[in-house]
Length: 203
Image 1 (tube, one colour):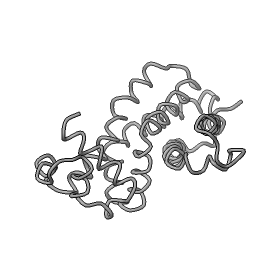
Image 2 (cartoon, helix red, strand yellow):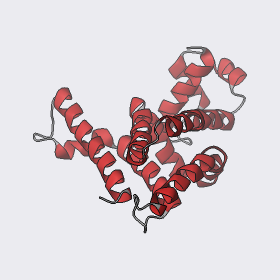
Image 3 (cartoon, rainbow, N blue to C red):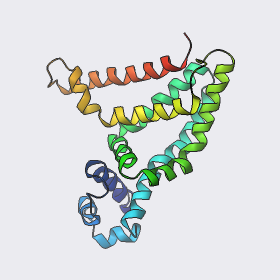
Image 4 (spheres, rainbow, N blue to C red):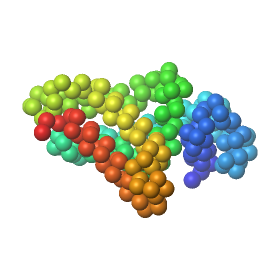
């Protein structure tokens, strides 16, 4: 991993843990083990770095989701695959989910611009698939397509971002082993997939 990617990864971790305002460029440079000037060579300001971190998260969807939509043609399987990929992406690095949760609260205007730029096209595309399902009776007629897609994204972000905390309530002893904890988290995520599927499709 080159310096640019290391800096971006460190910034993701620190912004997720402490918020944008709670992190200095020096602390990010220290986390990576480079001089602050090296960081500024790659990212001339803290705001530029913030945008790079967020773009790295959002750009994933511009490439991955269209591939899933093309590869999976059946209605239920298509939406399950989308939800599972969304979960997989954020669960692979939970700081991504924590970062977005913080940005939604701390930087609403900036996050809104990023959503409009990076997510709106595929949100509208998925919503259109939902409306097609409604026409043939596969999807509940009362589902608000665009709102449903946004709810799923927010549910995944909130669930994965808080996974290690909230799932302790499901553990039998409150301090389960790592294996048991992983099993509880797996159950929790599987239930999220079931909820999103049940809310969408007619039995």
